[in-house]
Length: 352
Image 1 (cartoon, rainbow, N blue to C red):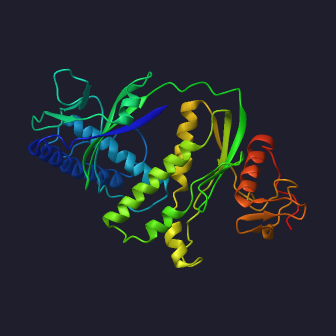
Image 2: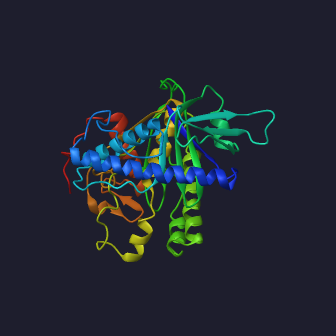
Image 3: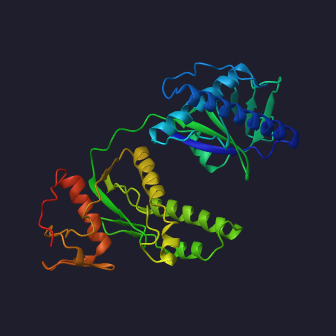
């Protein structure tokens, strides 16, 4: 399994950072030249770019890296079935050990991370200092190995290096019980064990901020922290398998179908972050993580399996069989049955 950790290069002096910025701009230009060439030649597959003759002061090695990145961009565009030529607008350089060497924990240094950047052209060699943080400290031990690939990024927040660490995943648990979760807007996570984690108050807060303002960005960061905190609170100590709905395009084309005020809040709902966070957590703990089809999970009775849309009334699910419970808890139980107990469950049950 692979994990990413980002270090900030803000500790480097202005001159060094300017050289990094100049290199990134030239790299962006070269990537776009390669994209133009690939699109013209209709080269949408393969591992190597046929023609790497691009005029630039970048080293031949770095131009090869830019060509590889351009090919990946073109492939992605075609995979998404987009017919327009892509444009590379980011200052992002995908680099490997030929260009970047990372040194940690030097005894005679004020900084505990040094990024050595070389072989990029114009005889530029840079040593960029940085500092460790909690996340990178977690990944530098316990059998994690630093990979040779890195990503240099320049954004409006500064200059960063993404480091990638690799570790052999633990064996899948054979002891424990299956568990399922329902991911919702009003209640972030409801488990089949009756855990209720997170609420929608943060979305109300985000909706009250002016988009793009500092307060808006702080609210978004607070939302992401709450997502992580809620996922961390989910008890997986006795779990061997975790099931969740395979949610896709939940917010797609919702504009005009629901109230504008609610749509503004729904737009900030980040269920993919929950799925991603839990998938990573399960991988680290040796727990099977599986997504199941979402059809009828909120309409099906977890007791008698009857499907009736009108049984769900707001936060309550009430079935004619006598089953009355929280609607999201009912959905999580259906997800559990679908994933763990009835993997071949049929949707041919009578729909009322």
